[in-house]
Image (cartoon, rainbow, N blue to C red; front, side, top):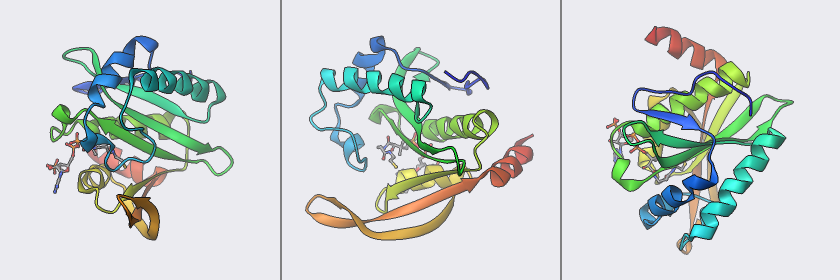
Length: 188
Ligand SMILES: CC(C)(COP(=O)(O)OP(=O)(O)OC[C@H]1O[C@@H](n2cnc3c(N)ncnc32)[C@H](O)[C@@H]1OP(=O)(O)O)[C@@H](O)C(=O)NCCC(=O)NCCS
């Protein structure tokens, strides 16, 4: 694993998943509201899916193509969600992020905290030039998270996702290293 910077926030921290996190992941994914606007999470979600997923994350870390972290709620030390930076294109120094949180943790700014931490990892440790995210146009909460973290809307990819018997637009958001640096210097 590429180590540091410290991926510790105020209320959460990000760390590599272990097989002992499978039950937390399984429990938090027992709600269709979480799966609704994601692309790769199976439904119904079984314990075996969580175990397979965790093993896959270790492979991605070894290959340096996909860094997946558990979002750990510091108060309880439990994994309450997952965030990843994947599809890393080392030549062009860009990568995609994706994330989810257990429903009872929504609306407290925790996903925004996790996205800020993964941006720190992406730009300060992996030294990427750009990070992007693709989401269903209907996913208002995720759009808000990205906007709060300094991403800009780059475009709409029309009707490229088929779900619930209809076509959906994908919104593409991105943030450059220079924008990240400008935002973080504003916080200091
Ligand atoms: C997207 C997700 C991670 C957001 O998590 P979260 O911790 O609730 O996010 P935050 O609290 O940091 O920010 C969410 C923002 O969206 C707002 N929001 C949520 N639903 C909204 C709605 N229907 N209309 C308007 N605003 C909405 C919240 O009020 C909040 O904004 P605020 O901080 O200005 O009040 C969570 O909803 C989730 O896991 N969804 C399912 C998986 C998913 O969609 N992943 C992303 C795939 S691209």
